[in-house]
Image 1 (cartoon, one colour):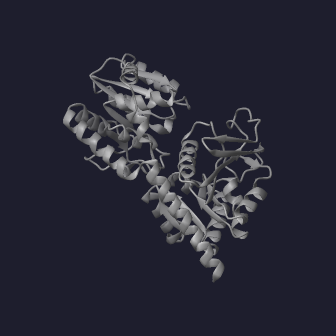
Image 2: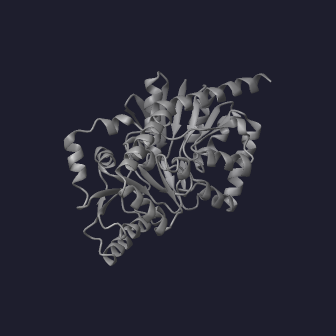
Image 3: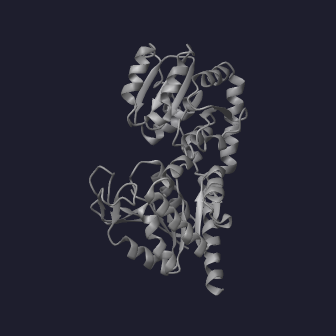
Length: 399
């Protein structure tokens, strides 16, 4: 089949959604499907533009559409409009292509409604966590957009949702009224080879990033206040033999975190590394003793937790969003109430004091990833979802 993956920023953009799109596209192409990535010509939402309108990355065609950003275009969360996009999308749909859109809400999700009218197949993967969608629904433009999308789903069975967690499925079915046969839970995936093919030198370099300490604790993600890194730093103050490595780009929290670290006299036990290469990040996952994702909100899936599990490491996560769906309490990790320094401290003290528990949790997490979260498994599930949408399209056309 021909599959068109649609996102805002194409390769070589670095981000969660971009990584998902590239990984899926590569697997689809490897299975013999004609796969394309359609995106804007924006390098980033603040940066310059790509000059080439079409390139090829790992056997996948990347087509870039001229884009314009305007605050007046308020129906799109990023205020982006695409030139010539809807016309090209409708033509591809008429020719039988499966249109797979990331994320929702977005202007390209609304543009895809014209594809449905023309007889095409559309699958949407939202990527936004449930709390954000609830807030969005409270806005006028949110009510308008979601009601339009729901009406389309009730009219055309070939409109499907690919959701990351059961929490999302419950939201779309029970709160939104989406037809339950038109959605499927499909998680994000990982490439196990990224964690398995690391050299001893890679591991030694990664371990050296931590300050001195008996237990190496890791956080990976953007340094945003919603990530709850302050909760982790406060908990660290109660673990005198542990050190913390914080990996990720500044997103509004770094200054306050450094002040907090100074006030708690933890400068010698906390290191903010900034951005690292992909190999360096994977090595950090392998080198840590405990991975913590203490988010306060904004976690739809929790990709970093799955990556830590792929590296065979125990995970401690908050009860935010979809995170509790990834961790089996007391088996591959621990869950604590978001924002609770006391509960996080207890979880970390337990794991820091029990090497057998760390090993057992890490091994259990790796097995879970191998059975449910590899990109090969995820890609096959999407192909099944695409096929079911195509079948529904043919049945609907014949009725």
